[in-house]
Image (tube, rainbow, N blue to C red):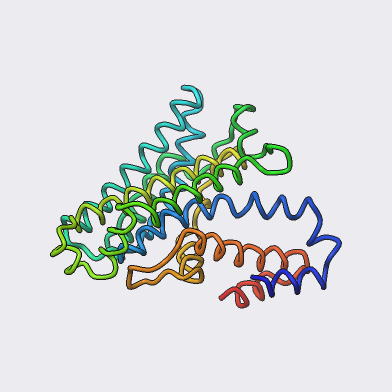
Length: 277
């Protein structure tokens, strides 16, 4: 991360280090970090959630599609759907004994199909100016989505490192048999890991809809692999039992700065894909 900042700062200092670009990066990482925090909990519990992109897109579509009933109803419905998708995934994994990869791959397809049907494969524009200010507004120099992300980041850091819930989650992912013998309800913790992931994906979808003031069928397509890669870059493991909230956020930041720097240098899109891979 430090190396990337130094390289882009030397090559293109006037643009890369400008206040406008720093604020843009801060706003941009907010949506992905929120999803990554939920994904991290699944990875710590030795699971993986591939449905976060579809959940994000479905939440954004509901937020825009239900805005005529009031933004409170629209946002509440979007978050509730995220919780429901997470609970569905959790039940399939914890009680159905379905491998998380297969379970969430199935829900990814189901939710994406429902979202395409709901939207009619057309963008849904926003009509509430106040709601749009959440994703585009700032508190001083700090974008509002970044403030929300920082609050969640602090909350997840405390949750995972200083609470019984967090310690038990690491135990469940590190050695589920030993955790079960120690009296930890392994299935319950796995269930809650997916519920948290679904909620975070939905919250990110709500904020992204506010940022764009619309919802499209293309939202969230790259999100699952991006946040999984970011979490692993930040120290998480696909085998479970490892990872930190701050590490996941730094992983997102590194990948975002890489993309941002290449965009500023006008690197050809296909070259960017190869470099990121």
